[in-house]
Structure formats: structure tokens, C-alpha cells
Amino acid sequence: MYSSNYDKFPSIPVEGSIWSGWKEILRHLRKNINDSNKEKFILLVECYQGVNDKELIKGFHSLDPYLFINTKEIFRPESEIASLTYPDVTDDRVFGYMTRLTLNDFVDKEKVVELQGEVNKVKGLVIIYGTASSLIIKDPDMIIYADMSRWELQLRQRKHKICNIGLDNKEESPACQYKRGFFVDWRVCDQNKKRIFGQVDYWLDTVQENAPKMIDAHTLKLGLEKAVKQPFRLVPFFDPGPWGGQWMKEVCNLEKDVPNFAWCFDCVPEENSLLFRISGQIFELPAVNLVFFKTRELLGEPVESRFGQEFPIRFDFLDTMGGGNLSLQVHPTTQYIRDNFGMTYTQDESYYILDAKEDATVFLGLRKGIDPESMIKVLNDAQLGKIDFDPDRYINRFPAKKHDHFLIPNGTIHCSGKNCMVLEISATPYIFTFKLWDWKRLGLDGKPRPINITRGSHVIQWQRDTDYCLNELVSKVENIGEGDGWLEERTGLHPDEFIETRRHLFSKPVEHITNQSFNVIILLEGRESIVESTDHI
Image (cartoon, rainbow, N blue to C red; front, top):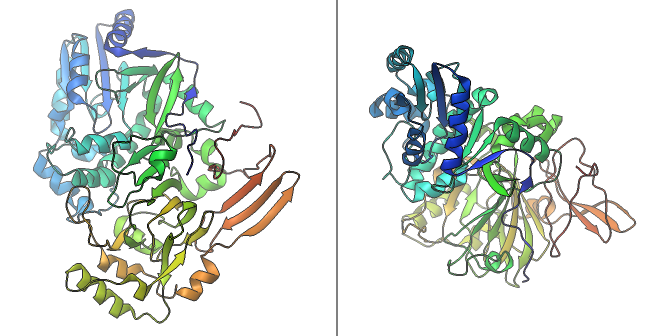
């Protein structure tokens, strides 16, 4: 184990305008409002789900509006919203259906008309605040968008600080809030953000409590344009888990008083943040904005053509060094995830072993001659506490050493064993994991984690036995090319997967061809590397 120069707060320098703190932000807005010389000035503050309403309402009230409207007034009753969203939220503890609702479906049309009438009657400054404010007035004088990354939202859910759209449910479990956010709230907010993106005048970062920062639309666009023209990183986040280890704590210089770190999400634009450094100030925004508003420039035309505005690859670290086994699990097939959850592609993945102890193993695929009905019955009986589940009777366990690579196409039973440091390279639908066995553990909340044996039984590819895994999935390295000071190898590409992984060994600067597609690059050995655009942008 070694320490690294791992940068936990990477940022992109951007030339532009930024206003920090309520005092500075309000001074700038007052000047714009006064300089307009309008009898009536309508300011919309559109919000992503989960921003701190109390702080923002207090801040914008300081502008002394003649009329202040909170969009909570226009939402349908909670009982109607619960009924409306039930087909997507469902009763399942983990899974729902990707909604086709829009914000328009959440609001009471008659209340919207009433508020429009109020606005028409008055003069002076009118502020319409909250999620769906852009549905009340179609042509306002100014729009401010208060944005938020999904990782920050999850942290707020855990602290019972926020509610889901149209509900007063702060005390609901974080898991329930997350599920509703994932399948409903974030989808409708993203759709609305895309709809009004070209109209937004200012973007607001309120991640740090009582320390807001604001940039104008021009600065945001400059930052997005700069990001897609150069190599960049997202802000990683780390999280403990019931099986978590100690490797990242040392190598990435993390908090020593946290018992373990199980995950690091280093490249998940749907949840990670992007940092702009503007005039010495850091402005945080959801990295998914880059996917939404610079799709082709970021992904390349072939990837955009297949995945649209989806960033299809996820990189994360799984740390079981000094920890425990992950849950035994399987990911749904493409057809299953389409039929049951409304997703267009599924989670294929692979484990690249960054480090390992001598006893490290990976569970992968089935032993030869396994009877499906018998194994499912044993799993169910073990879950009920009638018997213990012996994984070695049913599942292959392969030795794992540093730089091994295990491919895990959808439908393959798998999990990392203890004492592995895994780089997980996967497709992005990341919550669709069917746990089959969790070693009788409790989650960090003290409750059993959800087990999905029935769903798993529908997607397990029973033909992926020992011979199949050895021939198709376990550490197959192919030489792609070599030259002066470099060697390129393919370590992973299964016929069922779209992600190709290559390994570069080099002793001098080497040019890397991206082939009209985005590439995710990670350092496997050494303390640091320099990745630059050949255009030197």
C-alpha cells in the first residue's frame, strides 16, 4: 500500500463572473432590477428538488418584493401526488419505474391560473420561488436556477433535511426518499432544466449553507465549453459500507475516524459534481449538466447516437481490504430492465484488481452442474434462517491478484471477496443490483439490506459455469500494439458488453487516440500522471 497524490477537489479554471454570499448576490440583482426601469419586474427562482428552501426564501425576500409567491401553493394535494406517482414509486423497497411524468402533472392548473391573475394585477417586483416556478410565467424578466448534485441530495436525505416534490416527507427514510428521487423527482427536474436552459440568466450554487455563489449564463457556458475541450475530472465522493475496507483511507488520505470506506464514486456524472474555479472562488454544479448541454462534444457522435443524453460508463472503487465480501449479486438482463424498470440498457461491469492480499478472491459464475431450482430454494431457505448458504458449493471462487481483470456481463452471479481493492468499470444503471445473499449482515442503519432472490432468479444466466468463466471472463489479455516506450493491451471486451478496456504501459509521453468517442482514463500504478489535450487547450 502506498500514498498517492489523489486530488479530491479537482477544478477547472474559468474566466467569468461570480458573486459570492447573499450580500454580494443581492446587490447585483437589485442593480439589474433597478436598471431595467420597468414598472413590473418578474423574477423566477426555479429550483431543483432538495435545495434549502428556508435559506433561499429568506435570501430572496431581502429584495423586498411587492409580491412573493412560493410554488408550494400550486402543487396538487399530497394524496393526489402519491396516487399519481405510485405506478413509478411502487411498494418495492428498492425499485420503481422510470417516470414519464413532467412537472406539469404535479401542479393544479386552476391554482396556476389564479396566481397568474394575481401577478397581472400588481406592479413592482414580483418573485416566484420554487420548483415549477417556470410553469407560472412563460416570459419573465429574469430566471435564476438553484441547482443541486444528486450526491449532495443524498447527504441531505440522510439528515432528514429535505422533502420530495410536492410532499412533506422529511422524516421518511432516506432509502424511500432516494427511490422517489431516482425514479421520479430527478427525472422531472432534469426534463424541466433542459426545457428552460436557454432562458436561465443566473445559476446558483447553494451546497454550502449560508454561503451561496452565483454565476451568469455566459460564465456557465464558458465553463462547459472549456470542460469538453480538455481532460477533466469530477469531484469524487467516498462512502462507508457494511463490507468496507481500509485501503482508500490510507492511499487517498481520507478521514481516519471513519470506520471504513466501501465506495468511491470517481466518475458518475449523474451524481458527482463539477467544480469551476472562477476568480479564486469555487463554484459547484451537477456534472450531469455537461452531459445534458454538451452532449455530442462530450460523448462523441457514435455514443450520442446510441445513448442520447446518458453518460453510459461509471468508474468506482470497491474497497474490501481488511473488510468483508460484497453481497452475492446479479444484474438484470437488458430485456428485464426494460420491461420492469423502464431503463434502455443494463449494468454490465468488470472488476479490475488494483491491489490484493494473498487470500483475495472473486466469486464469479456458477460451478458446473448446478441445478437452478435447488440453488434458488437453498438461497430462500438461508434467507429465512433455516440453513446457512455455502457459496463454494454453487459459485466459482477465483484467486485474485493485482492487475487481474474479471468481466461481468449482465446475468452473471458475482461479488468481490474480502481483501481486494477493485476498480469497478460498469455501465451506468447503478442501483439495479439483485442481492442474492448478504452473509447475514445488517446495513449501516442496523436493518437487513434488501434481498432480491426472486428477481435474481429471472435473470441468472445458468450456462455461465466454470468453463465459461475461464474461457470468457477471467483475465484475458490481448496485445493491441507497441512502440518506442509504450505497450497497449486489451484486458476486457465481452461480446455482450459495449465497454472496451485497454491497459497502457509507458515509460515516456505517449499519444492516445480517442476514435471520436469519450475515454475514461485512470492511473493504475504510480503517484501521478499528466493527461493533456494535444490541442493544449
